[in-house]
Image 1 (cartoon, rainbow, N blue to C red):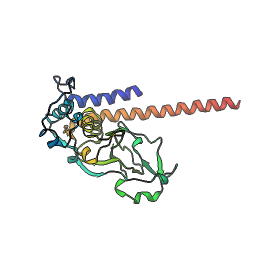
Image 2: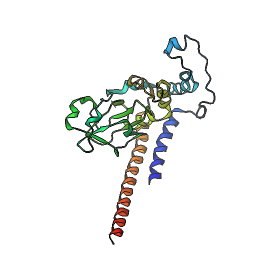
Image 3: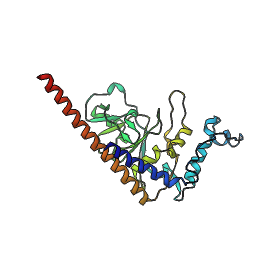
Image 4: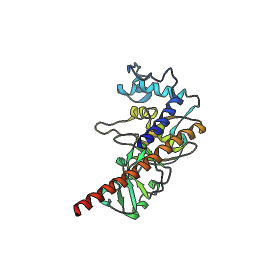
Length: 258
């Protein structure tokens, strides 16, 4: 069942690539990352002088998106609400409660992991109301493993911690947008502008400045259907796993009792 879930997710990812990459340039990236720029084309134009920023692979992926037959836009063009998280004090963390706190380590590739969630006092939501989560919000990490993206699928009573960009969008299917952001199409763009030494960081403005392909709504619906099938099968698989674990634990306890 889990294998089937992965199959549907790979199908959705592949359909994105089929949309963007023609057969002639699908295997193009990036055998040669040498690029020569003048001062006016580099520092004066971008404010960046590090060689990593000017590798060919970054220009190539942007060219593919900009040449997409459906057109493209910046992420900020479809965002209707945004927030950058709030610096909740770790001293206020609770092991149990009604108000969860979503931290960067809860954001995985396309999924929200609540297994190691911490909680806040109920009145903490008044510290930053804009950082309260709602169904279909999209979360994007801004530190460490930058650009990890997931969608909030269910109504959960939660707040977003610092260094997490929370957005809601219009005219784009949230699951499909999340898949695009997690794909090479956007990850290379984020990698290009990410800064930092030991820990990479990126600003919310940099994330909102990435370009995305304007995929036809009908194609989005097809891709979203595959993603939803994948997550439904994952959920079913996890439920079966938990039942199996419970039965094994019960059998062990009964055996010990005997």
